[in-house]
Image (cartoon, rainbow, N blue to C red; front, side, top):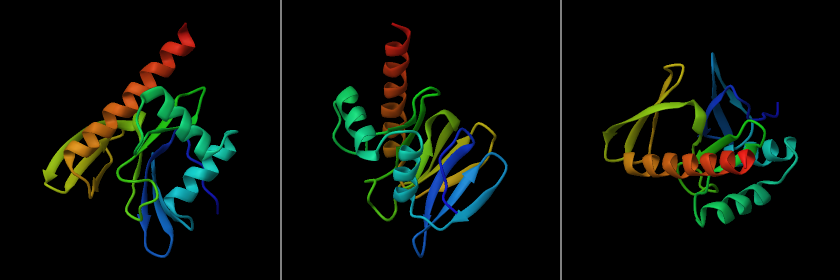
Length: 148
């Protein structure tokens, strides 16, 4: 089964054997695709390429690494990576679904979603906070472009 990121998507977490654990509103399930493959397929599904989306975000933000990706334009469906997108450990998190984050320890952060589901990500609080900020900035800039 191929998976496309949608408004119900909370996070995509890598698993062994080139699989992903997808968290959605009311369920979670394993998909036989790597998170990066899901990203590429989702961008294509909504009419673009991952590279095109990445370059667009880079131009808007002036950032080079770990840029958030706009999966779908009309709803500003934006996801952000916790590490380098090609890394085997990269978790993708949906910006608009994050309620808050909590520091667990040096290398772990709890992400609480708007439906009160929680996941623990093997990533520092500072990194997640920075990625949230970057994705939020992209969201604001895009909304301002649409409204002008």
